[in-house]
Image (cartoon, rainbow, N blue to C red):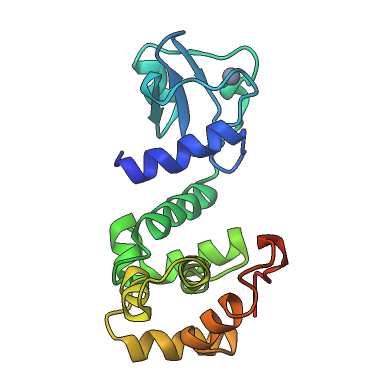
Length: 200
Ligand SMILES: [Zn+2]
């Protein structure tokens, strides 16, 4: 598991978020117990955690199922949810790269059509729409605070050409990146952060 994916799943553990339940299993090295990511028990330190893609793998590694969150009573694995969660992990870690549906599908070792259909069934969004959403959130954040040049922001969210980035941003928000920044930063600098609208 690479660091970006580890961080994502660990965040779910820290927040007791259920999104990775049935997808990953949390082995806690200090206690020898394996939990669901959402277990209500005290959050272990990252150094003491190992994530396993199945309960069987965690049991093989010597962990015993937690009596509190009962990862062994989770029912059958939901392969569609697993695939969607894996796609989310790749999108969250790779939104700054050139990421296509077929590239994403290739990394997950499924066909593009299968990924598209399954992802939409599980999340209600297409993978492309999800990627747009992640990139827009990041771009808005970078435009809202700081002075990073627009072209650099475009590159940071996966666009090589500044004009391509600007056109894409305008299509989704109704403003160019420069207009958006001026609207958010201009005239509101002395107001509390809470008064700055999240969306144009
Ligand atoms: Zn537990």
